[in-house]
Amino acid sequence: MGWFSTLFGKKSKRIQVLDEEEIRKRNMKDPEYRRVMESIEWQDQLIAKVQAARSKYEEDKNIDELIGVYEFVLFKARPPIKNMRGLCLALVELYRKNHQNDKAWGYLNNLTLTRQDILDKIRFEQCKILKAEKKYTDAMRFLMCGYLHKSKWNNQFQKEMFVKEASTIANRLKWNRDQVEYLAYLIEQRVGSKNYNEGSLIESYEKALVEFGSRK
Image (cartoon, rainbow, N blue to C red; front, side, top):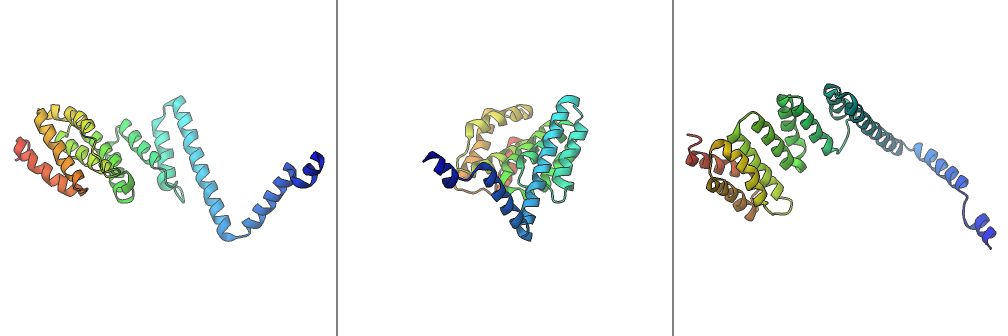
């Protein structure tokens, strides 16, 4: 019975591979199928290019060359790599590491138009840049906006985490704990009412700055 099953009940691996190849050849005659397959193969090539560049960077630490590869796959390739938000944020980090804050900022501004799904992470990256440039009042504003957008995904504000991060900026501005708590309240209030309009939060923050004596 076993030999009968082997001969007639199951296809050998060789026959199965031949069948799959025949199906592939037949499908490749369809222009739409061919276009999709070529697109997938191209994307795989771009991913492999990034992986190879990162491995090379671990050896030679040539950050300019690594940035060039990221810029190619994200901007210059036709078509560029798709749906890789991790690569977008990695490029921003590389720009910052290479002291190219202007390029990082410009790229982040472009991302706000195309990647609303990572707006919280964009704001956090902008906060890091502003902190590095010692623009602390602006850094706080972007930190607040980042937490507002982050809260949108589950309608929950991570207050303790915000207070911890905000306190490091507040210390530079010589603000006290009560002032940081008030800024947390401004975010908490909007999350509670499901108001995720950062313009409204920024307006309240600007008023708080006047009360704090940080802006006339």
